[in-house]
Image 1 (tube, rainbow, N blue to C red):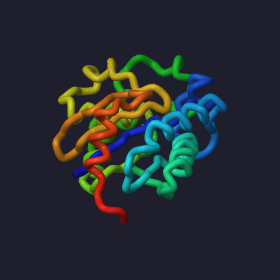
Image 2: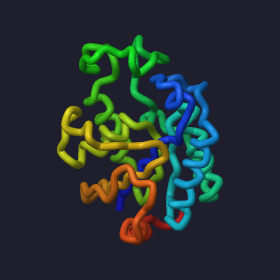
Image 3: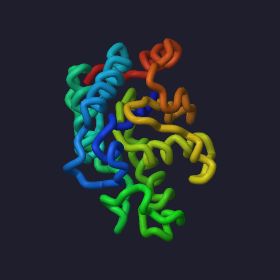
Length: 196
C-alpha cells in the first residue's frame, strides 16, 4: 500500500498579511495556526503512520513538528514538498500579482508541481503524512482527478486541512477535510506497513 496524507500548514503570517512567500524562514504560524495544527494532529492521532515529511518552509515545519510530537514520530524535511516557486513575486501581496498564467509570471509551472509529486509518490510505502502548501497539494490531488490547473480552482485546501490519496489505487479519499471520517481512518489503518 502507498497512501499520502497531505496536510496544509496551519495559518501563518503570510495568510494574515495576504503575502505569497516561498522563503524558508520567516512568516511563522500564528496562534490560530498552532491551534489548527493541533487539531490536525488530533485527527491523525489514531492513525498508524510510517513517516512524517515536511516542506522546508518554516510554517510547514512548525505544523509538522506539532503533528510529530503528537504522533511520537520524528519528522524529516522533504524538498519536493516545498512552496511554489514564485519568481519575482516572492514576498508580494497576493493582490499585487497580475492576473496572468504562472508561466507568464515566471512562477513555477503546474507541470513542475506535478512532476515533483509524481517523483515523491514513487517512494511512498505505507502511510506518509506530508506537510506542504495549498497550491502544491492542489496540483498533487488533481493528478488523480484528471484535472488541469483551471479545472482545479474549486478545490479548497484551507489551512491545516487533510487530504488523503491512495497512490497505488489512484483513489482520492478526502480533500481539504478538518475532520476525518471513520471510513477514512479505518482505510488508513489497513494501509500502514510494518513498524520500521
